Amino acid sequence: MKILHCSDIHLGKKTFGTKEFSQKRYQDFFDVFDEMVNIAIEKEVDVFVVAGDLFDKKEITPDILNKSEEIFGKLKNKGISAIITEGNHDNISNDDEINSWQNYLEEKNYVNRGSYKIIDGNYEFKKIKIGDINFYGIGYPGFAIDNVLEELGNQLDEFEKNYIIVHTAVSGSDFLPGLVGGETLRNLRDKVIYIAGGHLHSHSVFPTKDPFFFVPGSLEYWDIKNDRTQRKGGIIFDTNTGELEFVEVSPRKRIIEDFQLNSLVEEEYLDEFEKFAKNLGLTGEELVLVNIIMEDNGYINTVSFEKILENNGALKAFINLKRKNSISGNTRDENTTYSIKEMEKNIIESWHSFRSSQRISDYLESYKNFQEEKDKKEDFIQLFDKMLEEELADEDK
Image 1: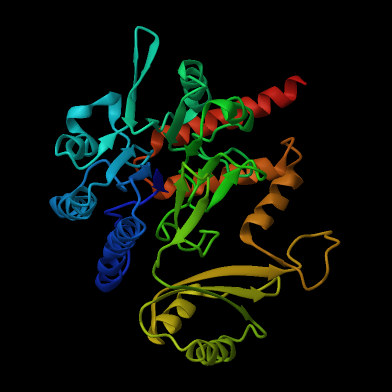
Image 2: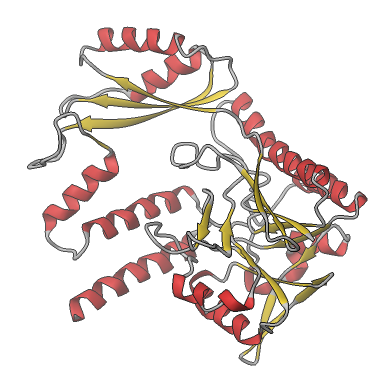
């Protein structure tokens, strides 16, 4: 059996900007998902898996639903089974299946929806049997992720072929709710043939050698400035041979460039940047991210740089400031540059109030991301509580 696993589709994502930019980016997420489905058909896969965040929001418009049905209809017409489970973006409240659009798609026979329930303290996991494979979709358990996977592991028969679909990634340097611990995954190693993950938007595997847990990453750039990878796609797993193949889709082109600011005289540096922008040869369809490298002191208006890029053919421009020698007492090479996050870390370190300035800096970055997601108040509070618990635990040692 061949299974294609993708995640973090984010259909219906609305972006801020010009009308042209917003409309094109809205369509981009449908286009790459449609491309992923076409690849599944071309590769003759048997099962198509979405490991969470099919939709960008719980509430969707008729247009989002209509486009989604058309794409899933392609799989249905080819006899390819689709299994989906919820992520934190399309997560329903209090298991309210009646108002779940994923539940609607299941009732229309476009998909099978993986889920679980807790009844009188007992975990009941829905098993979707296709061929000789047992599929279990557990969605997004949030901070309960380790406990839920442990409960599922206790119910799995190690002599059967079990495939888990869960909206999580391995905890590490990423400070987000709902990340699973490596030890929890290791305890499942002998009971599964594959764990399909998601949540983070870059491709990763666990463990590095002989992996069994996979995160394909998002199909499109959900966070244009901070997405760490240019490769986008899904993973095909052949259960008969054990072979794995990462199949790429074509997200909107993102260009990342550096620009050295040699003068703080506005007329001079804007003139130089104009020449720089023209040399990029933009066509009006690219997302352009420019890292402007400058000395410690001085103020520049990043909006001016964005306008120059967009006037020279960028669909949308983004600017990152990186400063040289911005951290006092550093011993790095004089040409080393520092991001805003690194400078924040140095400031936090100077307070001498926390055990790990790096950890607090990572939390701060996550809080900024939550600020842009107005319906993520609960996750924000849970993450803040987690930070406090860790700091208090450190104090007790």
